[in-house]
Length: 117
Image 1 (cartoon, helix red, strand yellow):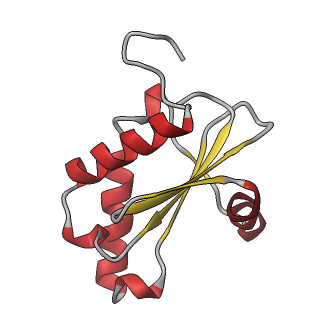
Image 2 (image 1 turned 60 degrees about the horizontal axis):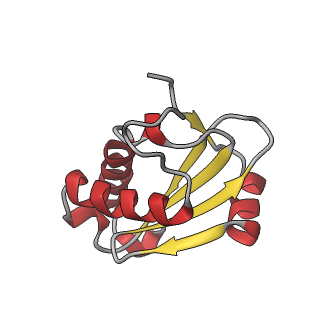
Image 3 (image 1 turned 180 degrees about the vertical axis):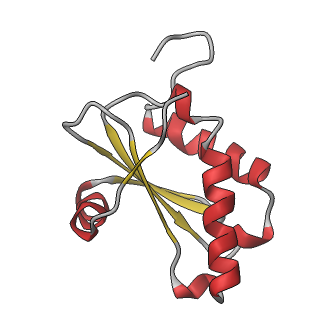
């Protein structure tokens, strides 16, 4: 399995917020934007609205764990920004994974399990 390439620069996050397509659920918000690198890059953010540092860290861990099994099925050439919401630290990663799968399928960047990426 490929290593997840992170989005680190603030301007890349801001580009995803400004130009990306947004998919919202009570647990996670996903911004999807086509990029020119040919790789899938993922950024995970949590605001202070989520809670204290412990809850924000848990939110990031839950989002990372939920994305990991879906990563091989995501089409190449997209930036994904996963934003934690207030409920994120209080749910299990499997529940977040189901929501994330629905959102990525709605975005049209998740291939079916039999298909090749």
